[in-house]
Amino acid sequence: MSSEGFYQEFEVFSKRTDTSPIQYQFSLLAPNRDLALIMAQENFMRREPVADIWVIKRSDIRKLSPEEKQSLKRLDNKDYRNTKGYGYLRKKWRQYEQGILDEKEILSWGGVKKNEQD
Image (tube, rainbow, N blue to C red; front, top):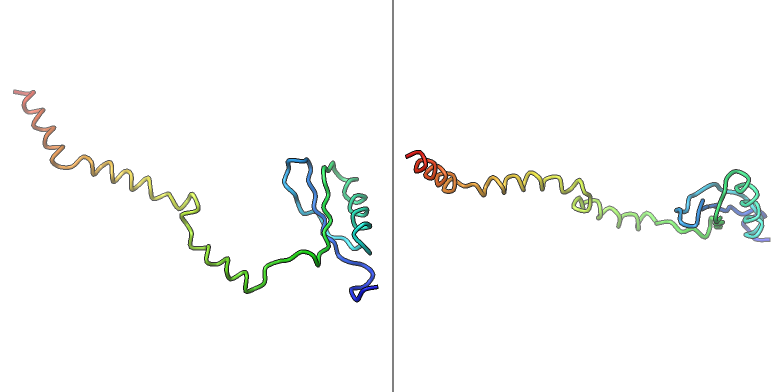
């Protein structure tokens, strides 16, 4: 028997169909991986149809350390990756289009109209 005790914590994930994303379902206590899978099947398959079940020992799941989480913060300044970051382009395009019609071009239209009126 290990120092962890008789029961170990397991996390259960499932997929409704072969193409659907995997979803977290619940945690359970079991003495080993095989019994954890059997318990997950018994608990989960009674409730809804399932294409696959994943049972993972909680201690095998690795999460980011506080130091590693710091590296994620540098990505927060990347507004250009979000579509909302491009909202200014419509305004810029409008300014560009209006800039095309410069004073010289507009005055040239006036000259054409005067000649037509004569």
